[in-house]
Image (cartoon, rainbow, N blue to C red; front, side):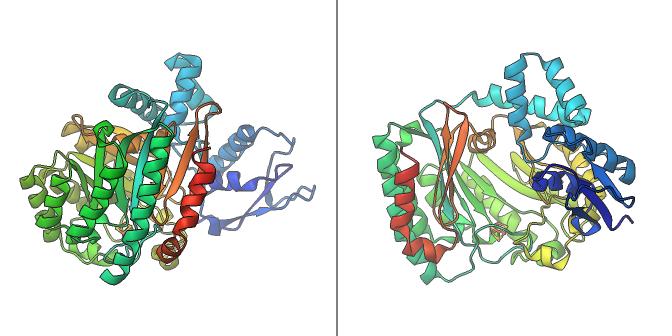
Length: 456
Ligand code: SF4
């Protein structure tokens, strides 16, 4: 095993962006970056001795040196910290020639042929499915930061609290919905998609769900909304009554997120439900006639092997999911798993690679196609999360949020609004506080932040 690798980067102070690339090859426990003191040492890998200011040139040098030392060639090449499909779109528009764009990805960004095909095809598919957003359109996200238990890989705003606490959150959220609704009208915006996510929105009672959706209906012009999603998420929070409320209120797209159909794994990752609860939730959603049921799975869960993963995927397809997102386990700083095993994602990288490939083949055979993808830091190996859809079950909100050419207005604790400026093609972030108690206490301040940065 490689360890204690000393890397010295000369004349380039923003080592954080280079660190993301180095992490694709080796664990942070195995190397250290040395300050540039102007000297050359025999036991160091020296990068950028000729002091270039071109970040990509330095990244190519790191890539080549680490490839020769580790024997690893990450499929995403030197692309870190960017949305690859978005970049494919930008390059296709700039050059207008797919062959040229392919050669940029392969020769300059060192992408594998497979990843290059994936992002170009995904970009073209997204374009044919939903085109570019109208300039005055926005997506709206409403966050419900509560879950029955906390998953060991979770790094989101997720609180495990009783009904009394949840009930205190509702008035603050209703206040923000009303405020944002007014701002949207006054500024001539149209809501294109509405996504209620979390946490787990179905932690709420049927009445609370109805209250929030009714408030959204009063505040936003629903006749213009093309997609309305509610993330039902945890199967143990789904009941007939809640599904009835969602259907009555016009929700046609829900998520039921099993992650795994193996009891031992569900126990290990901190979920308090059984595979049978997942089957029951799908059974209810199917019998009620939801048009799109999305399911999230994770490749690389603790103690899962290939047969566990394939079994889960096949069963989820059989249960009627027509939109499936395959995530690669990301071990983020705020998760319990990070404390248990800092290097977990490096250990399982090979297995995950095989799982993703096998999963892709099964989904293609079953008539699914990839329609959006994104990469995160701290993912198992050099992989990605990919959303597959069957027929026209794509998620418009998912596409828009990754494409970054539309404002996304986020409400609730932990929501991060992204205001898009078409003139400069830039996004400005306007975050709400993450702590739900703070959110309740400082709701006026959350609205004031939007007043100052969103509408002007
Ligand atoms: S369901 Fe999602 S938000 Fe809730 S604890 Fe698990 S990972 Fe976190």
